[in-house]
Amino acid sequence: DTVYLNGSFLPLEQATIPVLDRGFIFGDGVYEVIPVYSAQPFRLDEHLGRLALSLEAIRIHNPLDMEAWRNVVIKLINANRHLDDQSLYIQVTRGVAPRDQAFPNPEVAPTVLLMSMPLVTPSPALIESGVSAITALDIRWQRCNIKAISLLANVLLRQEAVDHDVAETLMLRDGYLTEGSSSNIFVVKDGVLLAPPKNQHMLPGITYDVVLELAQAHDLPHRIAPVSEAQLRSADEIWLTSSTKEVLAVVMLDGVAVNDGKPGPIFKRMYALYQAFKNQVMRPKR
Ligand code: PMP
Image (cartoon, rainbow, N blue to C red):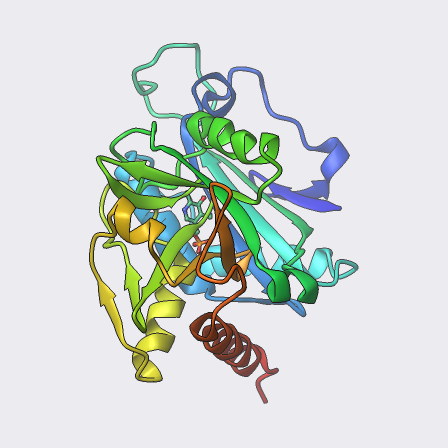
């Protein structure tokens, strides 16, 4: 596979980073994951916009302008055309400098890496059955709106899910749902779709935005409001969303069935809307 590292395209095996890179030493950097369907990036400008905000939040000068980012992304997609659908990973760290927590002074060039991995979206069987999840306390920091590469809490929370043989860990902070360890969470109650409001306790998901746009466009009753633990546990439906999982139903929470333990009717409607929307915007332009 071909990767992009600091201006060059090269085989993954030949791409190396100095041990003093602040990404390696401190987890001092940010990232993006962009789904690519049939060589076309989905919501590219939104992902690049969020990357720009993450960089700004941690005070790294954006190393490329929008046009340059778009060009690198397209080139990398084309260099990896052997992959059917791709999950394109972008990482920017503060660069290489002697180990000191304060920013390097003078500033050093950020390290820019792009790589492509196979995009594996949930199988039809998984869409049909839904997945199980557990809950855990949200032990993360107060800047979860930044897509930071320092993901130790997420790593531990996600491993808890694996240890319980379930798909995701849903996090609760002060009695309210924040998000999943690598997804945003929606709840349906009495026919109304509920979405936790964007704040410093969750990542502003690109897929979250798509789902709310579709709800709006298709008159699906929805409300952006905090979701309490009680609302989560009495939900008619629970969904998780992310760029790689798209929209997936959670049918079992902490070993208890969500409603009848099957993906609900509103999930099915949204799943169909999401696929239709994706196919529509991904249709080759003429
Ligand atoms: N929250 C967290 C913590 C995540 O890691 C992700 C996936 N990157 C999401 C939410 C979903 O975001 P998106 O829809 O942009 O993939």
